[in-house]
Amino acid sequence: GENVEQHPSTLSVQEGDSAVIKCTYSDSASNYFPWYKQELGKGPQLIIDIRSNVGEKKDQRIAVTLNKTAKHFSLHITETQPEDSAVYFCAVPGWGNQFYFGTGTSLTVIP
Amino acid sequence: EAQVTQNPRYLITVTGKKLTVTCSQNMNHEYMSWYRQDPGLGLRQIYYSMNVEVTDKGDVPEGYKVSRKEKRNFPLILESPSPNQTSLYFCASSLTSPGDLSYEQYFGPGTRLTVT
Image (cartoon, rainbow over the protein chains, first blue to last red):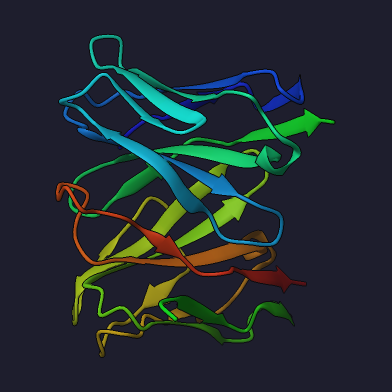
């Protein structure tokens, strides 16, 4: 199956700074790359995704960039706020409805 | 309100005692999945279903069963639970497959299972 690696596992930033989380994958056939945010005690929630026909997608303070040649995609959060503190997961689909998640990044935004 | 619900939210049981975790969605979604979440391992897919009576194994199916007799329900069955199945379980659903441009996966609130 797909091998998805996510780094870093923990990240602390000062409020207002930027945060970047990177994900690498192994299957070049993948064409959908989502990022999920999981708040304490809740299920993951999709925050942004990108498809393989674009290189970057932005939604206010968050953006995702994709490098298909190098098989990696990254989540960028600018002007971080305390409410951005959560665990973030990347994911890559496999065959059918198989889905492979990264191991997660715990982001702490320090006020 | 559109949502995925799971019951129970918390469960403590003993080794070998059969249990079922229910999952229901009210969005008329075709696709449903079960995941387990363990520290340092992220979420791993257990089983998924692409329609009524159509199920397939995910990455870690051993020790689990599922059924999809109705579109809205996708129960997870542990016939003989063992301590290594202690985990946080999530059910998820989507209207379409990842290849569709409108794809989005919705997760339930989670079920924390402890097997002693």
